[in-house]
Image (cartoon, rainbow, N blue to C red; front, side, top):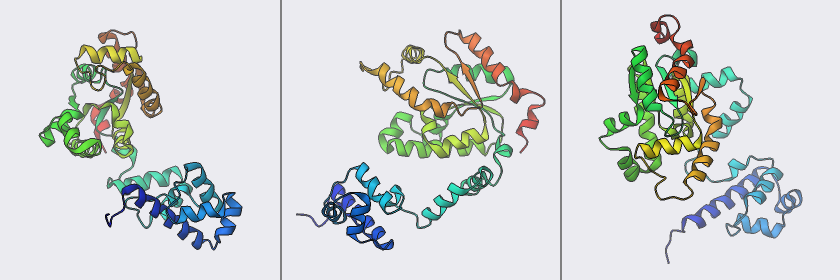
Length: 297
């Protein structure tokens, strides 16, 4: 026997404690909660004692019956005491107030428009042509070309694969955000090629959107797959019969995020030169006038 419960047991005990505490805060008896939620009093007793492995649907009924937010019931690893206040204020805030709050919390202290001073960022799945077209664009307009993954490797002395193996995805994304922040301190115009999964990290992706004119390089799933295979980069697609299905699923889940870009360039069926020409056309709003005006913040 061990004095420390396993993680699942500990989680259920914390969950039960939260339900019990919230019910008490609202002055509801177990019987009243059972009546309002439509869940048996016995089941609620099991839940509060940490012995009921409740489904998310039933937990939602319990939180609704108490007039609580579901996320307030589910245990967090490190809950901030002021989080409920901040959350409720954000829900009532205007877009301008939210933008100001983001600036303060991120430490930037400037509006998004004033921070859009670092150049052009290319986003999209692997195989979209971010490196190839990014280099061509940078050469054409005389800006520096930067690959974010290579910056991460240079700053940490490890390859992306080694970073993920040692520190996991969470560690990699921390280093990705740190590398991006370091790039932004240089205050120089650049064409930045990002990793395909950068859109999955809200803070990092928001920094991209607010600091760069962002272009989504879009292609058909089959083209993404073919280009990656031609590059000899098969991770995580090697020897996987369901690779195309998985790629389509990834693309579908990320499309709403990629679509937040300032512009979209569809490279489907285009040669490299034709795609580069279309990209140059798409970034015309950035290049109009003196580029130094764009860099002024």
